[in-house]
Length: 87
Image (cartoon, rainbow, N blue to C red; front, side):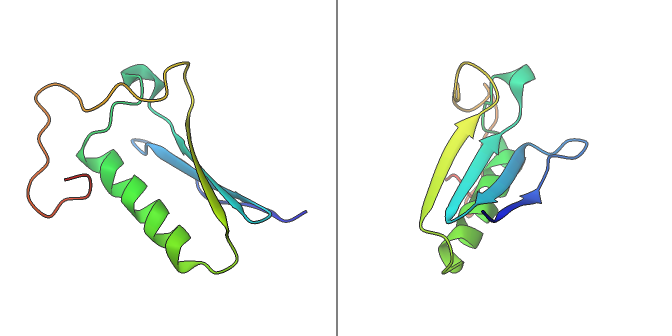
C-alpha cells in the first residue's frame, strides 16, 4: 500500500491532503470555524483538486472534514472577489 501526505495544515493552514493508493483524501481542518470556507481555504481546496486532476495515478478524490459538520458554508461577511477559487 502506498500512502503519502502531501500537505498538512501548518499555522493558519486549513487543508490536509493525503494519497492512499489511488485515492486522494482532502480534509478540511478548521474545526474552530466548523470548516466554514473562507478565501484562503477556498484557494487551498482549489489547489488540492487541480493537483488531483493533473495526477494520472489518482482515480478518486474524497472531501471530508475534522468535525461532525462537514462544512457550514462561507463565514458571514467573507466575500470572494472575481477570479478567486470558490467564486
